[in-house]
Structures are given as structure tokens and as C-alpha cells.
Length: 76
Image (cartoon, rainbow, N blue to C red):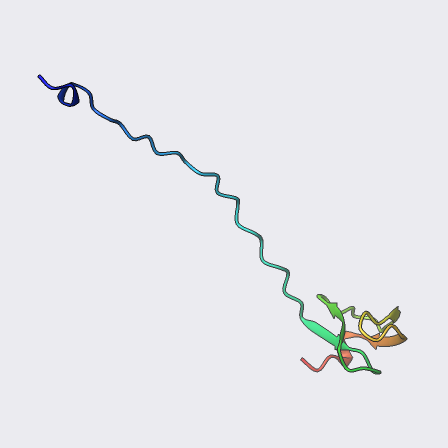
């Protein structure tokens, strides 16, 4: 009997690590543009019922800009 007949070669499969799925980013209802440069400056998920004023530094043009928003003023 030849040596190759008595021995069987087994192949082991290795389970690879599968990372968990990445959660999708939250969906924002309103995207507010900078009044100076026109690029998106802030995203608002829920508009407040009372008017609020927001002052912030625009991430695109680096200027201080002011926003006023409320549910009554939303166009969507």
C-alpha cells in the first residue's frame, strides 16, 4: 500500500473577524447655511417651539455668525 493512500489531508477553514456594522449617521431635519459664505454651518434635528438665537463660529469661513430659528420660521 502506497503512503499517500493511508493519510488524508484535511483543510481547516478559519473564521475571520467580521466587525459589527457601522451605525448610520442621524438624519437632521434642517440644514442652516452660513449667511456670509453660503456653506452649511449647522444642522438642527428638532426645531424648538420658541424662537432661539444662536451665535457661533462658522466652520468654513471662520466668522462669527448669528442665527434665529423656531418652528414657525422653518420652510420645510
